[in-house]
Amino acid sequence: MSRAQRLLDLLQLLHRHRRPVTGQSLADELGVSVRTLYRDIATLQAQGAHIEGEPGLGYVLRPGFLLPPLMFSEEELSALVLGMRWVADRGDGPLARAARDATAKIAAVLPPGLREDLDDGSLVVGPGPPPMAGEVELPRIRAAIRTEHKLAIAYRDEAGRDSQRTIWPIALAYFDHARVVAAHCELRGTFRHFRVDRIAALSVQPDRYPRRRRLLLAEWKATLGIDS
Image (cartoon, rainbow, N blue to C red; front, side, top):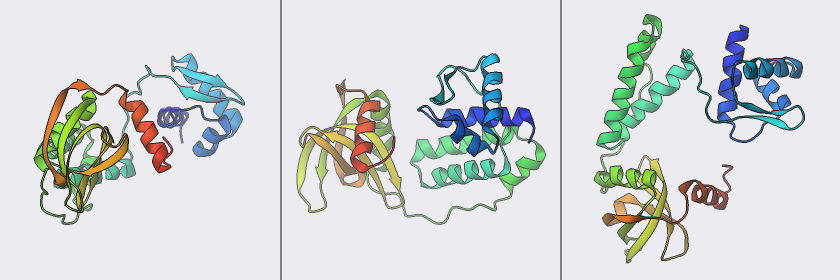
């Protein structure tokens, strides 16, 4: 591996870590010595990368430093193509169109060899279920999540009980046979999960929920034992 590629790999690795990570951990992931790792960090810092930290404490890449345009490896391209084909096949209308548009944009800038890999059709998404009830509401739910607005919903649970809820949506999970909104429920005073196909009516409220979604998301993940 060239040193230039190693430096790019180090930047990508630091981008994936939101918290300080030790030099030894970074060196192990890159397959280099700690001494080489320290030299590479010093080089990137000299080139303007906002890497903070020191030996023994760990390093973190602060926001504001953008990676230069990168060429995808064959495996990275395979992962992107498979993911976008899944979304194009399983997503609601706007999300499916966005996946197809993103694929076209990537294909337009690839060299011929990688372009052939993208077009060869060797990665196929298997048949999925037909569209479910509530699919039409997914764009509005995603918009409410992005803008941190409350949702008022009429909900029917698995036992057939109806209720009116005001929720603070923080995440939308896509399963093959269900779409599930993770949210703080004002009625229950805690986090709950709502299947979109069981939402009989939905309206986006003008008021935003009182806490930032990023904080709520971290609390929700903690309740599930997920490392944020």
